Length: 499
Figure 1 (cartoon, rainbow, N blue to C red):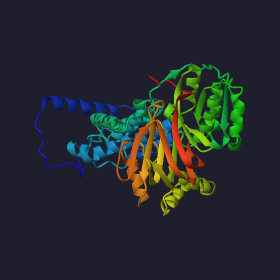
Figure 2: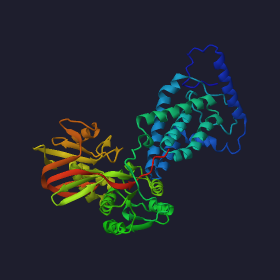
Figure 3: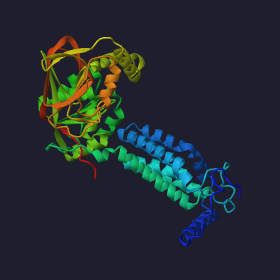
Figure 4: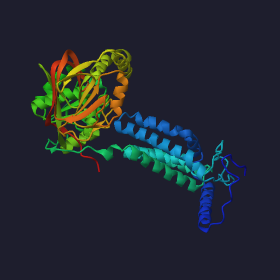
């Protein structure tokens, strides 16, 4: 046998060990049994599958396909699968291959048609392909059981192909698979899955159970590009009424729908959901939210990620009461389900709106951020505690945000009675100050930023024409701005966590 570069020929040959020798003998017999057995249809498939899995190409392509389904759970599953694969590969290449220097199996019993054209030159134990396959499949399954079931046969095929093509002993594959699964659980320990941090479903409340959707009027914003999702919901609830309209007609159609609905449904982004919540509050009817925009913070914090979640909640009558944030300034007032902010963020939103129709949403967001951060003025001066402060940002979340950065992370409790307030003080280098605030803990005080949780906040001395952003919408305020909460004011459908 020709030695491979990773085989240390200077290492001492280990002495005899009865149990180890028996296990290695069994390992070899299984390898030879697989090599001698003819598997119908496997010869043209498994060698190709083994080659496609080189360097993780198969798994990156699979992750892209899973993410293309455009559901939040699928995207998280794809990212978790890739992260698990990366950890497993790093462990194999830095520790695994160097710990046990085992030669590859002899290819004599393996039919030529199965053998790979290019034989690997690394040590045999453990199998890197099996580790990557198991890590990716386990990572996906921990986030989404459905996608995990789809990916698992592919991962099993790759692992089997390594023995079938003669490049690994069975024990190499088993050890690699075990390491891969361990990597997936290690990633979950660092970044919990959505199921591990399920928001508390409180306080629960009675709501109509609509087995076939009778009494639900679903108003869908056609500008959100979610017709597929709305169609699937109506297919599952055939007696529901669907109203599709342009963004400019949303308010009017919501008002009409509320007069004849037992439950007001809405499909759109956070701004559309905000408008629907205000109408539902005035009419005293429950709200059913189907995410259809870009971010959908409120729906996702409720645990509604798609039509299946909402259908289940509507059919079972599962609902909760949630807090509603409010702002008042002079003659202007409004509500917010997610966030309300003054300072640099409203200016960024305005800049993004000005450019989004020309260059697209994400490029417009980047351009807006650059233009705002390069400005040489503080966008906000406000009185807090009797003193005037220059501020880059004042952010108030409707409920406590966890791991909050420049964009809010998520809330575990939508009825905690608190405003999660963050202030980024004025000064030089706004980008540095904003990043420092983004990575700080939820309750911090420093020369650059501060955070506190309160039930009510009043800001005085706000200059005329100051922009205020709420749930992605922008308005102008001046003088005194008051932010407060209406505790448990809105009834919203929310599915029970799956067990």
